[in-house]
Length: 85
Image (tube, rainbow, N blue to C red; front, side, top):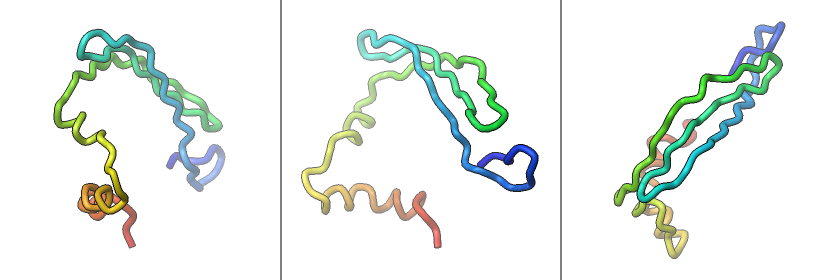
């Protein structure tokens, strides 16, 4: 949420992320830029990032064969980070 221009109210941010980079071997390297597209647009300075291959992350990305398997895997995370109330 970001302040709405000329108001005390807030509105959802309209962030746009752009990535420009290359995949070489087991690493993805490039620049990430964030742009806020609300009434007062702003752009962040490009940030250099490198994502390396990770066995743990790869295993997390494997899809569950059934909804039950998916739910068992993600329920603890949903309870901790999901909607409250």
